[in-house]
Image 1 (cartoon, rainbow, N blue to C red):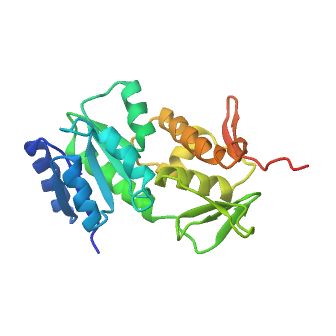
Image 2: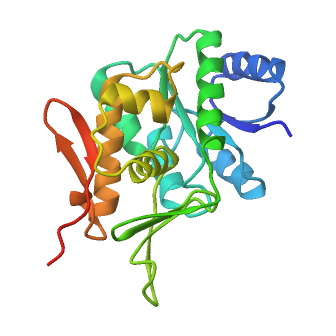
Image 3: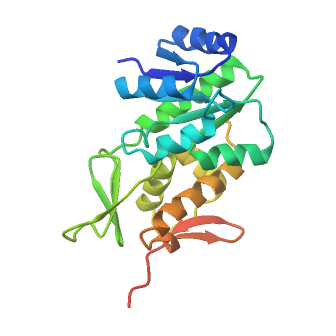
Length: 236
């Protein structure tokens, strides 16, 4: 079954360029000129990926991405942010808002398609039917859910975006092991993607913040000069 992609772009010529390339690769597309129209489309049918422009009339793409990440139905949809803002600070803002990847205008259609394929592949691959448990955390990769204290009568569920979920899954499959940024890029994002190492730090912060809300933020440890690892909490 072909993947469904929603393009949220207010410049018709750019939306058409993206559409032509996506259709050529066999994707099913929908287009929206602004976030209100996109929200209606999403309520009708969830897309497999959203290509989201930063600068939109009315509500910005950044604000819309934040809202998508806060919604239980849309929090796992991969978001590719598309914008003319190319400074590092702008990229961090987009990633902090919930984007999984970031492409600056003007862009190469070939690179854009490669990023789309990589995002969809990362979203679909690596799933297992086993429940992974490390210390207080339990992760179900099929249901795309994470809990703390799952064995208690009322376990607390942790809401994560798709990239943070994959990061945590990788950490939980290899607990106590130190992972360099390069290793994480290869294993979580894929070796054929165009991602800067700084992107890893942004998503680690988002993962740590989410875990921190349930008292598990310290499990994601920075190993100075080496990378990151998931460690077990010291229990008394």
